[in-house]
Amino acid sequence: MKLKKIVKHVVVLLAIVSVIPSMAMARPGKGFKNDSFSGPFRGGSMSGLWKNQQLIQELNLTETQTEKLKDLDFAQREKQLELRNQLETLHLEMRKAVAEEKLDDKNILSIAKRISDTRGKLFVQRVEGMLEASKLLNDDQLKKLKTFQFQKKGRGFRQGRGPNKGGFGDIRN
Image 1: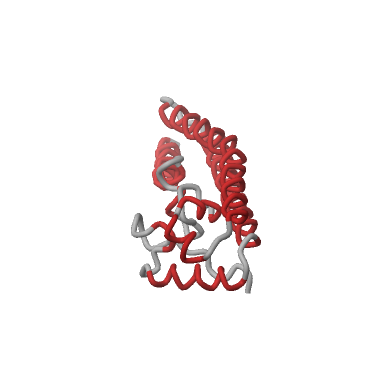
Image 2: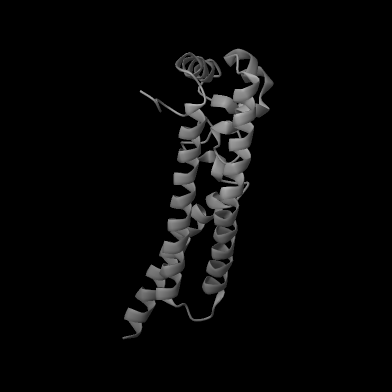
């Protein structure tokens, strides 16, 4: 009977240890820009192109396009604020649950699922924003953007910051 209890605690601790690194990557300002759909700036928003003067010139963006990208960027950020705050609250809940003397497996797994769901919603919002931004560019601008991305050795719009994951793939092909 005692062996079962020990095994149960070991399994729970292993589950927690495997969840903590993914939680660290999900923290706002830390891990969001490291996923495979990150765009030019924090949060993965391709609409952040309006901040990059070199890209504005390379793509020959009009003032209207730049302004629409700027508006879209701020709208995306506002939209994600609630989910990011919710995610931070869930991380705090997880830390509290793990710090308890007696671990509540159901509660910990429930919190882990809610963290995963929230991260999924953030990802979908980033992809939606990326698709919205791509609609503001014409086909020639999208081609130039992809070319610019590859010239930067796959680092995308982030101009050398972070890992090799700044692209947006073939979103309209």
